[in-house]
Length: 143
Image (spheres, rainbow, N blue to C red):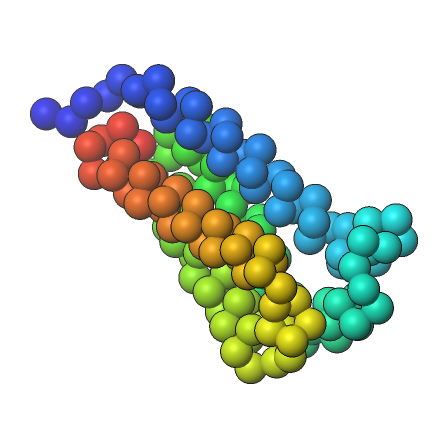
Protein backbone atom coordinates (compact mmCIF):
# COMPACT_ATOMS: atom_id res chain seq x y z
CA UNK A 1 0.00 0.00 0.00
CA UNK A 2 1.40 3.46 -0.89
CA UNK A 3 2.63 5.58 1.94
CA UNK A 4 0.34 8.55 2.52
CA UNK A 5 2.33 10.56 5.04
CA UNK A 6 4.83 13.07 3.79
CA UNK A 7 8.49 12.58 4.64
CA UNK A 8 10.13 15.59 6.24
CA UNK A 9 12.51 15.79 3.28
CA UNK A 10 9.61 16.67 0.98
CA UNK A 11 9.01 19.91 2.84
CA UNK A 12 12.69 20.78 2.94
CA UNK A 13 13.25 20.00 -0.75
CA UNK A 14 10.08 21.78 -1.86
CA UNK A 15 10.83 24.92 0.16
CA UNK A 16 14.43 25.02 -1.10
CA UNK A 17 13.16 24.38 -4.64
CA UNK A 18 10.73 27.27 -4.31
CA UNK A 19 13.49 29.60 -3.11
CA UNK A 20 15.76 28.41 -5.95
CA UNK A 21 12.99 28.92 -8.52
CA UNK A 22 12.20 32.35 -7.08
CA UNK A 23 15.79 33.35 -7.86
CA UNK A 24 15.27 32.27 -11.45
CA UNK A 25 11.96 34.11 -11.61
CA UNK A 26 13.64 37.26 -10.28
CA UNK A 27 16.35 37.00 -12.94
CA UNK A 28 13.74 36.47 -15.65
CA UNK A 29 11.65 39.45 -14.52
CA UNK A 30 14.62 41.78 -14.16
CA UNK A 31 15.90 40.80 -17.60
CA UNK A 32 12.54 41.01 -19.35
CA UNK A 33 11.72 44.38 -17.81
CA UNK A 34 15.27 45.55 -18.58
CA UNK A 35 15.74 46.72 -15.00
CA UNK A 36 18.57 49.19 -15.27
CA UNK A 37 20.40 48.42 -12.02
CA UNK A 38 20.10 44.66 -12.45
CA UNK A 39 21.18 44.68 -16.08
CA UNK A 40 24.18 46.89 -15.28
CA UNK A 41 26.01 43.74 -14.10
CA UNK A 42 26.13 42.51 -17.72
CA UNK A 43 28.33 43.75 -20.55
CA UNK A 44 26.71 45.65 -23.42
CA UNK A 45 27.15 42.54 -25.58
CA UNK A 46 25.40 40.37 -23.00
CA UNK A 47 22.52 42.83 -22.68
CA UNK A 48 22.16 42.92 -26.48
CA UNK A 49 22.11 39.12 -26.48
CA UNK A 50 19.30 38.95 -23.90
CA UNK A 51 17.30 41.73 -25.54
CA UNK A 52 17.65 40.08 -28.95
CA UNK A 53 16.33 36.64 -28.02
CA UNK A 54 13.56 35.43 -30.32
CA UNK A 55 10.07 35.42 -28.80
CA UNK A 56 9.87 31.62 -28.83
CA UNK A 57 13.11 31.40 -26.81
CA UNK A 58 11.78 33.91 -24.29
CA UNK A 59 8.58 31.82 -24.10
CA UNK A 60 10.62 28.67 -23.41
CA UNK A 61 12.64 30.55 -20.80
CA UNK A 62 9.38 31.65 -19.15
CA UNK A 63 8.08 28.07 -19.17
CA UNK A 64 11.32 26.87 -17.58
CA UNK A 65 11.33 29.53 -14.87
CA UNK A 66 7.65 29.66 -13.98
CA UNK A 67 7.36 25.89 -14.35
CA UNK A 68 10.01 25.58 -11.65
CA UNK A 69 8.04 27.89 -9.37
CA UNK A 70 4.77 26.07 -10.04
CA UNK A 71 6.41 22.64 -9.69
CA UNK A 72 7.80 23.55 -6.28
CA UNK A 73 4.41 24.88 -5.15
CA UNK A 74 2.72 21.70 -6.39
CA UNK A 75 5.21 19.61 -4.43
CA UNK A 76 4.33 21.62 -1.32
CA UNK A 77 0.67 20.84 -2.03
CA UNK A 78 1.61 17.18 -2.50
CA UNK A 79 0.16 17.19 -6.00
CA UNK A 80 1.40 14.64 -8.53
CA UNK A 81 0.99 17.34 -11.17
CA UNK A 82 4.38 18.56 -9.98
CA UNK A 83 5.95 15.72 -11.95
CA UNK A 84 4.65 16.85 -15.35
CA UNK A 85 5.20 20.53 -14.62
CA UNK A 86 8.81 19.95 -13.56
CA UNK A 87 9.42 17.80 -16.64
CA UNK A 88 8.06 20.51 -18.96
CA UNK A 89 10.13 23.08 -17.09
CA UNK A 90 13.30 21.02 -17.58
CA UNK A 91 12.56 20.38 -21.26
CA UNK A 92 11.95 24.10 -21.84
CA UNK A 93 15.29 24.77 -20.17
CA UNK A 94 16.95 22.31 -22.53
CA UNK A 95 15.43 24.01 -25.59
CA UNK A 96 16.44 27.47 -24.35
CA UNK A 97 20.00 26.43 -23.57
CA UNK A 98 20.49 24.55 -26.84
CA UNK A 99 19.38 27.65 -28.70
CA UNK A 100 21.44 30.06 -26.62
CA UNK A 101 24.69 28.10 -26.65
CA UNK A 102 24.34 26.00 -29.79
CA UNK A 103 22.45 28.00 -32.38
CA UNK A 104 23.30 31.59 -31.47
CA UNK A 105 26.33 33.46 -30.20
CA UNK A 106 25.61 32.73 -26.54
CA UNK A 107 28.79 30.73 -26.12
CA UNK A 108 30.89 33.69 -27.27
CA UNK A 109 28.88 36.22 -25.23
CA UNK A 110 28.13 34.21 -22.06
CA UNK A 111 30.58 31.31 -22.36
CA UNK A 112 32.84 32.14 -19.43
CA UNK A 113 33.55 29.24 -17.04
CA UNK A 114 31.30 30.60 -14.27
CA UNK A 115 28.28 31.02 -16.55
CA UNK A 116 28.75 27.57 -18.07
CA UNK A 117 29.18 26.00 -14.63
CA UNK A 118 26.13 27.77 -13.25
CA UNK A 119 24.09 26.64 -16.27
CA UNK A 120 25.18 23.06 -15.54
CA UNK A 121 24.11 23.42 -11.89
CA UNK A 122 20.70 24.74 -12.98
CA UNK A 123 20.28 21.75 -15.29
CA UNK A 124 21.27 19.25 -12.60
CA UNK A 125 19.02 20.80 -9.94
CA UNK A 126 16.03 20.89 -12.32
CA UNK A 127 16.56 17.28 -13.36
CA UNK A 128 16.96 16.12 -9.75
CA UNK A 129 13.78 17.95 -8.73
CA UNK A 130 11.85 16.23 -11.51
CA UNK A 131 13.26 12.81 -10.56
CA UNK A 132 12.50 13.44 -6.88
CA UNK A 133 8.91 14.44 -7.61
CA UNK A 134 8.49 11.40 -9.87
CA UNK A 135 9.77 9.10 -7.12
CA UNK A 136 7.39 10.68 -4.61
CA UNK A 137 4.47 10.20 -7.02
CA UNK A 138 5.42 6.56 -7.59
CA UNK A 139 5.42 6.01 -3.83
CA UNK A 140 1.98 7.60 -3.53
CA UNK A 141 3.21 10.57 -1.53
CA UNK A 142 2.19 13.02 -4.24
CA UNK A 143 -1.48 12.51 -5.01
